[in-house]
Amino acid sequence: GAGAHSKISFPHRIVRQVRFRQPASYLERARLGEFVAESQEVTRSELPFEFMLNALRLAEGVSTNSFFERTGVALSAVEPELDEAERRGLLVRDHQRLAPTELGLRFLSDLQALFLKRPPL
Image 1 (cartoon, rainbow, N blue to C red):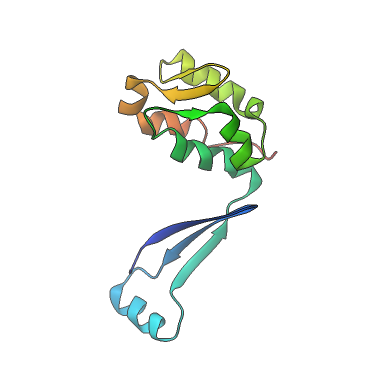
Image 2 (cartoon, rainbow, N blue to C red):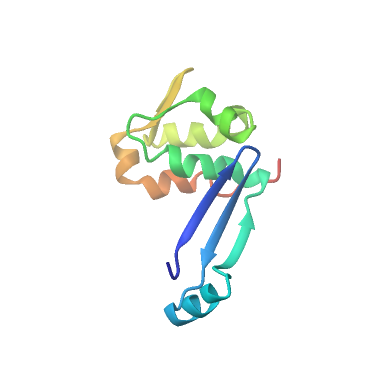
């Protein structure tokens, strides 16, 4: 619908799309077969944040292997951010799993923001 955002995951890339915001514009463009106002491919340097944005919402956490499986980036690439999240009491991890703490779930945006700005890989 109008203004909707979507994330489309392909085997080797992720695309984010935004539909036309105003309902009248959306309907007019839809009649022409033009639903998407904006489309952007997620860059390699953004993949760690994309992963953490979704994974850290899960109270049970995720396997550490899933980071590489989904991003193609070694987990060590976000070691400083993981260390900082642990230091703040927002995350717990071991060699098999990483998960938000109760505090991390309450301050999820702060936890996710630690992974937001990454230098190019």
